[in-house]
Image (tube, rainbow, N blue to C red; front, side):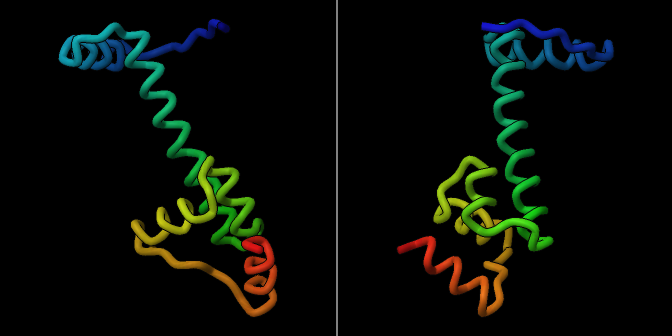
Length: 98
């Protein structure tokens, strides 16, 4: 297990301490959970941005987001977004499902 150092502002440390106390957990555990959740969200946002800009395919976007293609499509739907494709990309996408 590796160790890293993060510099936090005084108000961030206070917020971490207060929230950890409310959860009945230690600060390290809360930070790990927040980092994991934040990275998952950042990965999805990165994948969505690149997919929306047509830089990556649906399957690559799903992989970057750490999701299956179906999960990624469901995530898009929950955000009110839709599959972005043209005829050529649709053929490629359909082949990925076969």
